[in-house]
Image (cartoon, rainbow, N blue to C red; front, side):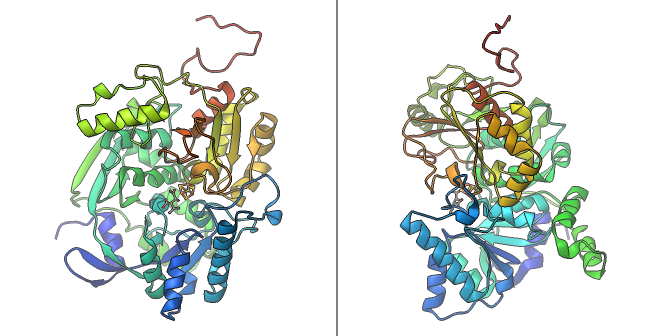
Length: 485
Ligand SMILES: CC(C)[C@H](C(=O)O)[C@@H](O)C(=O)O
Ligand code: SF4
């Protein structure tokens, strides 16, 4: 028998029943819910009078519709009636079925994918499901996470299982170390730009190689979070000592020595692809050649190094890519051949389940230093969770960013998808640390440029997309200074 991939090990250990060659009944260790994709699932359950047999394996978080104004969460009220109804429904459903909920006014509330690992809910080897595509995030801890549809949410609530079609195995090896000034966001944008927005469709991607080993767990969250933007059905990094340290620091039950902990550690040590495991598809990247990346279009794969020029549709041989580039440039109002760096922005958004964690905010603070947000720019920081917010306040990051002219908000999805009242106006261009730059994502007609926290911070200071490695662009000059090239 040939060796198994980590992905296959995770599937095998959760297979309750083999349905046919392609489908298994998969056990779900943890099901996360939000207010947006759960209401119909509960309605379906109630219509059939079915209970939730394992309520302890489900956790709900109000994430998407929550207002993120600066006022304390204890005073937080959802004014939009349909959104308020969604939050009320979630509360009622959770109470009825005894499901834990991070509610609207909970100081630990935030984005589901930021909140769950913080509380030690994600452990290596788990299968984690959620009615949300960015559930791939948990691969950073060696857990198989992926998004499910509303009817599947109902199935998981009722049976704790999912009818699951098997994915293929893809391995992406990233050799070498990331150059200074680049990080997981640049890497994942570069990977998606190379393999395409559908490049991993049908596959679970295992990331490995020297560059991945060197990433922190929070950086791995960023990487696995965005794997879904290449179409991946899951993303994994084999858990190493860093992952174990993270989990032991966050999971209170495991903090003390004991047989449970010993058994868990012994199991986690087996969570790696066997040396002779065969992958259906392999990609290799050289980290040492990476530059800071930024998107120019309306799909996450329309991204280039920040020192590049806006492409021309003629650059694309494939007719589909050419016409989507044409459409994208019309929407983003960029001219082919113009340098990407220097493009003026009116808004900066720092947050989301991709880049709303404490390390991201530290990166922002380090970039901002003693500089100030450029006149005419509105810059918002929305921490990924209440815990991230409190930590950033304790470290002085909040005070520094407030003094620099940033808005310091309460946690939530906010302007990542503009489902609350954080919506951009038509034509406003935004430097954003989020994961999707689709048309209208941050507001009708609003233009999104995806980038790292450091680059978004620099854009806030200069009012332009900025190449931090170019001494003519960064650091910014004080008004009385002149620059000699
Ligand atoms: C609202 C939810 C279903 C959606 C997702 O699945 O990802 C959202 O979180 C997003 O980022 O677009
Ligand atoms: S932060 Fe953005 S990507 Fe993440 S769950 Fe919320 S809306 Fe989706």
